[in-house]
Length: 355
Image (cartoon, rainbow, N blue to C red; front, side, top):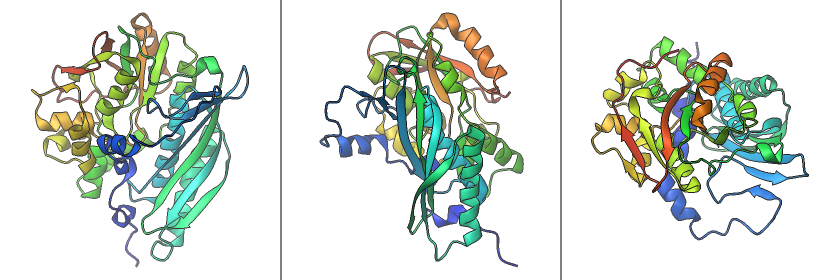
């Protein structure tokens, strides 16, 4: 009998942990002219937002993004589902509704069985069907490592676009999914994750962030982004710098996946977590143990939405999120006037914030 396929053995990294570290990415892009003036381009690369936004007319804006990576799990269909869910998240994070996707496929066709490649595609199609959009084509190459993702397009009213650079002092910060995805998928690759842990992390990574298109229609929701490869702190820093605000995080309020805390305390992290933390500037969390610092830098694959909301609407927003099937949603901190630093307070609860 053939040995079971382990997709993660075909790649040196996986999921959003494959991202180039934020400090190195800044160096790469520092002297590269990405933009030329265009009044129809509502969102470009200037604040490291989740997608580009181009205004078509007074009532429609086109949201365009692409996201792809190497396997983060071994099961082909699961990998396809995770990659597609992650790519569509960028559209939802801008406040849009996806309308169309194209596949980005790179496979070692001489070493990876055909049934595995077909399974990856099947998983991507499954998620596109769940989102109500066609996977209408794409592009494929023969590559030494497996790569899969999507180019995704969506639509939103120009007034409903939510950027990562429009948070206001006093806003509450809401996180819709738990952290610890990078820790748990690293444990999976090492053979140290339980079956229950795999089921939990898979459910989180394959849950669409479709609630974002609804939240963007609430005037009390001022800014949104999704938490992916740069970790919670990395993406919050982008919000702070773009918006000109600081932030405080309450560690005790942050939700984590059930097995992530014990695994993290045992030192199980993807390499990208340490690269992320070393690349952050403006984070005051020196008193934390290293494993807790790295949890804040843990790269999330298909993570949750980070939402800046008027504090008077926080209770209603949390109720809406819980009713919509996001049971881990929590208020985790607040934006504040002043410099763009992040102040971390409190301690991580050793009992995970479960549903």
